[in-house]
Image 1 (tube, helix red, strand yellow):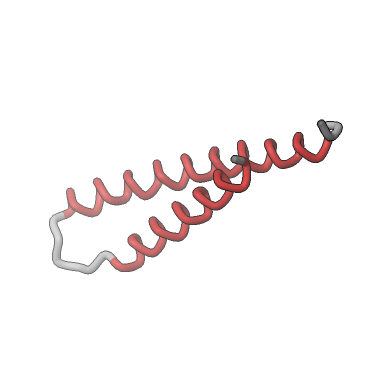
Image 2 (image 1 turned 120 degrees about the vertical axis):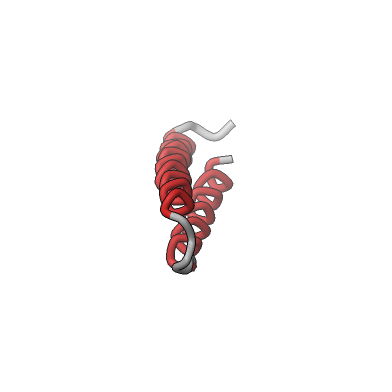
Length: 66
C-alpha cells in the first residue's frame, strides 16, 4: 500500500506540472486561476500522500516479521 501511495504521488505531481506547462495562451484569466488552484491543491495532496507512503515504508522496515 505504501508503494502505491508513493507511486500515486509521483504520478500526480508529474501529471499536474505537465498540465501547467502545457496550458496555452488565449484563455480568459479565470481559466488560469482555476487551473492554478487545481494544480496547487493536487500537488499538496500528492505531497501528503507521498509522506504517508514514506512513513508506511519506514514502519514496515521496523516491524518484526510475522
